[in-house]
Each structure stands twice: as C-alpha cells, then as structure tokens.
Length: 260
Image (cartoon, rainbow, N blue to C red; front, top):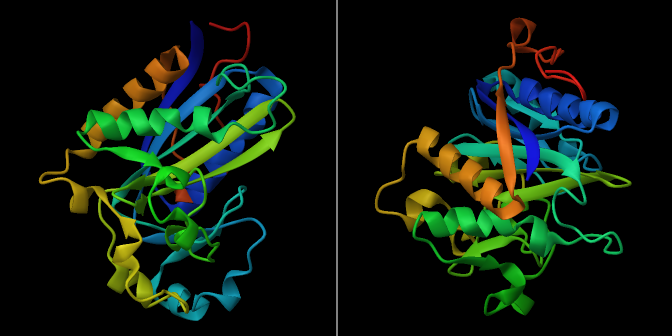
C-alpha cells in the first residue's frame, strides 16, 4: 500500500489556494511524498489556465471593484468559476497513480476515483466520450464548464466540474472542482462570453441530488474514493494559514522523506 499526506485546508482566498497547490507540487519534486489536498473558497472567484489572457474574456475592472479574485492556475484549461464547491488537488508519481511507464497520459485511470466518488452519492457518472451526443459537444471553449473533452466527467450527458493537470517527467499533479451549486447569474456579471443555455451542458450536485451532503461528508467520500482507487493510506497534515491570506505558504509541518 502506498502512503500519501492528506491536507484538508478548508476555505482560503483564491490566491492562497493556487499558491498552496504550487507549493505542494514543488515540494513533491524535492521529497517525493504524495499529497492529496481538499479545499474550499472564502468567496466567489475565478481561476484561468496558464496560457489564457483573461482580459479578453472577463470584465477585470468589475472584478476588482467588487473584490472578486481572478487568479492564474499553474495548469491549463479554461476559466473556472469557484464558489459553492469542494476542490481537490493531488501530486504523485505515475506509478503511485497506476499509470504505466510507457503510457503518456492515462486520464481514464487517473480520473477513475472521481467516477467512484459520484457513484458513492448514488449518481451514474461517465467520461464524456462515452456519452451519447459527444461528437456534437466535443468542442473547446474558453469557459471550462462549457467545454466537453474526452475525459471530462458527465452525468446524464452534462459536464460536472473540471479537472486540469501539470506534469514533470514522472510526476503528475492534478486539481479539479466538484460543484455543489453554481450561480451563473453572478458569474455572468464578469464573463464576456457566457453562453446561453449553459444548463443544458453543465450540471451540479444540487441539480442531480435531492439533498446535497455537507461539504465535510463530501470530502470524506472523496478521500475514501481516492484511497480505494489508488490503494493509498494517509497521514493527516495541518497547514498553518498564510500571512494575511495572501499565499506565501511554508509547509513546514509536512514531513520530508525519511522524517517522522
């Protein structure tokens, strides 16, 4: 059985969330200890892929005036709106995650824990390429929720959440969102291109379940799904909050290889 560190960092600012994800990735390059992190958002925010230019797609002055954070991710993909959700990130080796050495990227295997998670909620989830009508919907889009790519997770043909990766040789980092609900009317105030009828392409737990479990319960189910899928055991790690909620984390409580 493999051993990972587990971080449940609660709700942080958007810049702190992205800073901590980057530090976890960089830390792994030095010590090789796998990490699963679960987190949330202090207030509504947007993240965008490392190669995007948000000024062409968002009303940044309006975001600044309303205190809505807009932060770059270290991963690719489109713009994501974060608010009422739980979010995960993990880092490990290809072998930790069951990806064969000769395979470049095995999204089906690595994202399998998400299917297991949704199944634990009584939902039937699948990869987008397995859904009927995929060929009509498999188009890229600047908004992550509006894009249907092969290994996006769908429920009833509608995309739920979004996931993105960063790789460094044998190292895999991935983070993604699991939306409990999305207020598209709020998001529309800041996005220049939000398509009409988005509810026909994207869904949330609130739309699929009669009652959405508490976020602590959702996190526990996600942890269990990850552990069962990758045969992982965990040691919980407490992360001290960043100064002034602005990032600059020092994960000094995360043990290095060979330490206690």
